[in-house]
Image 1 (cartoon, rainbow over the protein chains, first blue to last red):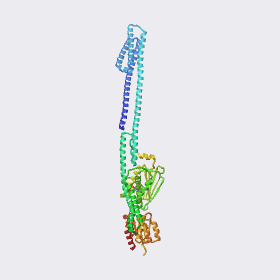
Image 2: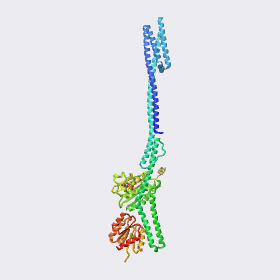
Image 3: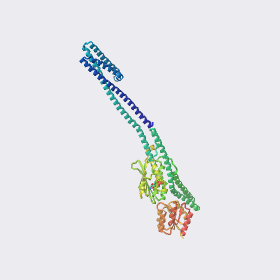
Image 4: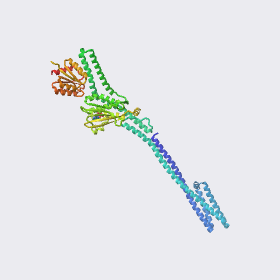
Length: 475
Length: 121
Ligand SMILES: Nc1ncnc2c1ncn2[C@@H]1O[C@H](COP(=O)(O)OP(=O)(O)OP(=O)(O)O)[C@@H](O)[C@H]1O
Ligand SMILES: [Mg+2]
């Protein structure tokens, strides 16, 4: 699902919760208002009843008949106003209570009416007096009771609304935290994945990620990065190949020299053979021709190495002893070293574990580094190549040390940049950048130490072969 | 007249062997060496008329041979042959006291002609 959709969905959920809460709140508020209105009415009623009861007392004190009329008038008023707010009262206290109220009022009216008649007949009756008092009391008590009830009800209602609001606040608060956490967690996970991928790409390790469980947005980003990574890999392979062709240019001088010697040998064998033909025994002749043959084999070998190096090759990892790769590189370079009068010293540790590398690429790295070393040295330089196990025993370490002019500290940070060269027309500036790329794609590293006027040491570290490494890189 | 003494120095064994065969055929006395160091040792004991040396060798090279020879025997002629012929080495060789300079592959007839010239100079 798209992240966008998820965010919309979660917002939608929160809005629904909010609407429900508001609906309840309004409902409750309405109820509270009704109750308050009723309490108002009930208070009015109470006041009226209080007045009635006062009038009633006056009547019993002074026996003024007018008082009874007042009471009846009052009751009529009360009836009138109760009828006006009938719905509100029913809503607040229910139909039954309203009926009881009505009945009480009726009872009271009846009692008052009875007294008026008795008054006409001038009969003084204690019993009627008590019944009046009783009915009045009942009426007042009832209305007071209802008022009290309604007050507590209203309070409860307000408290309930308060609680609902509080709870819903927490629900929305927590749900948005949980949802945003869920969404962002996935986004962050995908971002982390992408970050790791781009980091490894920027270090020259052109990996791709397949089949990741992530959102559509993240998926399309990963697809784009994968595409970029593959494209970079292709470009890098092209670059490696073109740098190789450039190295071949540098190497040809050495190869030409190397070829000249067997060529000269064949030529001299032939010239002498012709000159001495008559004096040669059969064995001598065979000996001459075998030498010619051996020299052609020697030429074939030189050409083969050279062609082998220049051919474009599919990248292919294999378990291999690094020393054989070093020796092969030295063989390719030996004439260049020879011509430049450079003494080569090899210190190869014979007991190294295997590495899991692309031998052609690593060979090219060595050729690039040796070429740089040769180019940095004037006559009588010394080249030392050492292979050994790294201190932590997880890497094989190859150091290539020259006694050349060294690299000024301010240039050190640039030498691995593509096209950085101090050799003008003599260099493309690709040697170290290509080498860096190759070593990085092997999960290794390449570092440099240099002192101007003294020399330079390049150190390559390549992971040693382990089963896990093998299967990891195989996939 | 005694035979002319010729020394050949080249790290290619075939060059030494073939030169020796061919030059002896032409009536010279030839000694060959695969590197400069034993050749220079031998020079301390014996004077040679002509020294044919490879320019580029492991250890001491043709130029070192030339210097030592000229110090010991100023009139001994040095002929240089080289597998790696570029303009620079040619100029460097010819500027020095080298009598002649041959790029490989060497034509033995030309080498012999050069030796003859050197002997009668
Ligand atoms: N061993 C070294 N000693 C001194 N300087 C070096 C050495 N190796 C590299 N450098 C410096 O680093 C620069 C970059 O080297 P890099 O191999 O990438 O390019 P380049 O040698 O100039 O050209 P290219 O290798 O493409 O022919 C060189 O121009 C040189 O200044
Ligand atoms: Mg370079």
